[in-house]
Length: 334
Length: 202
Image (tube, rainbow over all chains, first blue to last red; front, side, top):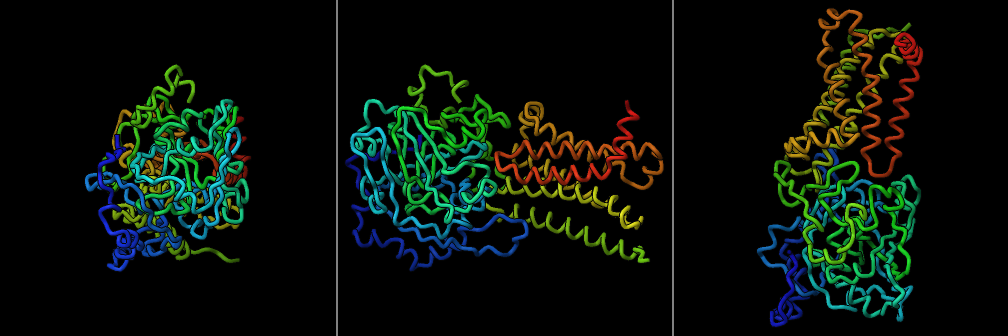
């Protein structure tokens, strides 16, 4: 398990540091030239011909967040480098190749933003851009992200439990499922302009969870990674992270969270039901029809020669969610 | 009438060598120096796979063009293009084995027999290997009529490579469909030859 819940007695970094200094730490680093060098390394398009041109920087401005820090120096070596996390993205709204989103999303407007929690709730909620960072205490969580394509990363997310948001909205007893929806804005998202540019997907992207899955403490609404707000290619300004399910469940740039009594029609499930189930729990014993899910390539710092193929674990190693599926045949409910 | 000379063919061969070899060398240089994005493995597989398909289509375009232009000497370009198609396909497979599966032989064997697209890929590589091995002038002479028969297997490879590509993608079928259309056009251009063969076999 990689999550560390800090003891209440533990001092947080922002308590031991003068607030101004803490808020300014990115600028201080920048002043030292660290961020400049980091940004140069942070992005480049994977292209065989692009031999010398490595300087197409990410121009989207992220800012530092204050949050309960749980990463220690010990964790650092296991994390996937930030550069890899923000340049290798499946986000078909910004193009179907993994190098596309970082290229085409840099002008994405995240402010103003509206996230609605609606449907079968006693108290519908509307969160504006600033509310995303202020409505709940933010905490850092290091999760493994297992893509259905059999690669994985280790990401230090920042966010809050979806549970807290649901508690505030007070679901009605008739609510059984939660449906999430990504922004639909073809002007900003080139993949939404036509079926061809967006990989044959019927937009907007929709994902869903059973209410008990959504209310599990591991289910995170993330607003940042590596200490900063999310860049667009990773789902700015707010996205879902469900660490025990394949990555496509963790929907990006969410504008609506709707509680329903019916199972939501989810995007990949509609496109290829035999390949992408509604549950999509990480399961090494059930292969994707076209490739094995028994192992995965863990993308971290190593080079091409790194032996990074590791065994995939049931529920991606988050076995505390097993009780949610006690009486279910996981080979059938994929 | 304008006739292509040997010097033109040499020039075209130089172009083929540089256009096929340099990108492949750059690709692996970038991969080994960790300059190929977050997941160099995927990039290697995509580039070599598409590259092999491109080169194979080009090599099969040569004989219809030769006939149309009545420039028999152009046929000399088929061999380098075909050999490069094979080379790219070989690198495609070796990258899959070494960097994706990381020499898990058991996984390789089970994937080949469980996944139709991997099976189609392996079958294609075997055909291309046989064609590459029998591509020299001396073997061509030795085999006589049998050589052309052997090399007609390339049409099967064209079909299995099309299937391999089509079955391998997650969605966005547009690009594989375009490639399959090109392959079909090349087969259609040979419909007389192919239907004759088919009839004779029955």
